[in-house]
Length: 256
Ligand code: G
Ligand code: G
Ligand code: MN
Ligand code: NA
Image (cartoon, rainbow, N blue to C red):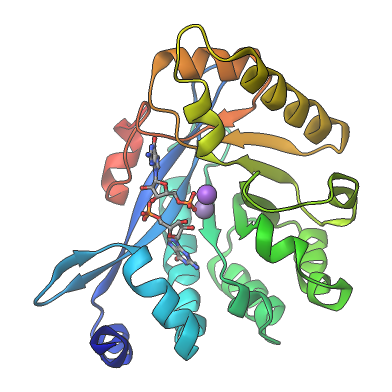
């Protein structure tokens, strides 16, 4: 693939940038933080989304330095927000996605701790998102780095939850603090009245998550009807176009 060959030069040439999508607390509608979403400003093809190049970077291993850059940049941004007092008394969090290849890299813990210490950001202001599929297929030795980061204070989110095949009883052995409910569930609540079975399924997942002391973030909220239903079902926070689309970091303060 021709894009693959240009990835290293693109990283060197600073062609990547990050957009941030707000995370909103459902209880009071306040801004909790934002998810960092990487884009490639390609000189000929324009702005490319992560679906176009993350799999390629994952395949070649460039995801490790690229992911390191995203982490550093997102942490720097979170410090900026805190300095400016955005988010009020509760410091804003930043969520960063981790690919399986990064999860398996021997330097993950050391590199992450180094970035945090260098920046001075409190570890609890960082949340690493790992897909349910990646986390569930990880064995104990592969989970250890995430456990160490969790003990250091970093949040760990199970991303795209509900699309993988978790043995639900297995959830308790995962070092996660948040469950991100995949947007396919949110879409199931689109109809008015919502499908009662869809409602029950989400209710069950939220209840299980809370029993395991996981907070629940819902993805893909596009309408006020969905937002209201998901809040009533006990979801803790939300993300989606109803609140804001991903955008440049300057736009975050006015997002909510
Ligand atoms: O909103 P968007 O189309 O940008 O996101 C598409 C997918 O790309 C999401 O599933 C997200 O997890 C992934 N993604 C976005 N940014 C990053 C990143 O920095 N690293 C990794 N590994 N995945 C990312
Ligand atoms: O990590 P993750 O796969 O969740 O990345 C978020 C992806 O979901 C990005 O591609 C982002 O643009 C997309 N997204 C964010 N909010 C919404 C939404 O409300 N509706 C839809 N359809 N997609 C969304
Ligand atoms: Mn994500
Ligand atoms: Na997701």
